[in-house]
Amino acid sequence: MGINKVILVGNVGKDPEVKHLDKGVSVAKFSLATSETYKKDNQKVTNTEWHNIVAWRGLAEVAEKYVKKGTPLYIEGKIRTRSWDDKDGNKRYTTEIVADTMQLLGQKHGGEETSSATDEPMNITETDIPAEADDLPF
Image (cartoon, rainbow, N blue to C red; front, side):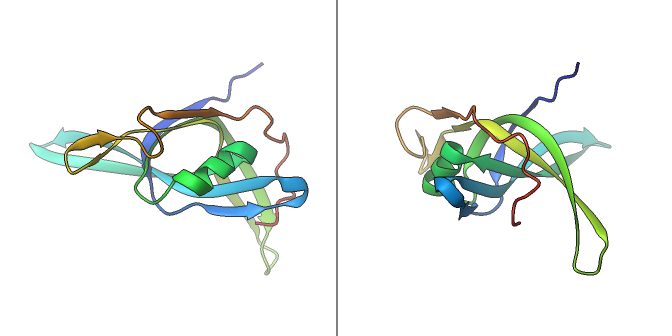
């Protein structure tokens, strides 16, 4: 038995790419940057990690409507690695975070604390994420 759980808080790196598949199923993909800052030899050092986020169904629809480049997000999900053969027959791999929960965090605009859609942070949970995503067209 194992646990595959990821919690990330960061900023969206680009607007979500949303595709609408058969039977009304939507999938959104976007990057999320998380940064850690520390001091080394009296110099401030920032290390930024980029994460590939995949959101399905209701979460994809929320991402399409409210998530834009720069949006601060809280994401809970699981790590998935998938592979495919490129056009030259080389095996390619990608690691993604499949989101189970997404919360839009408040942004500061002109010194005021606001949320992307409402006065309260929006917390959305998706429980019916498909077990296998290997047959996706992208």
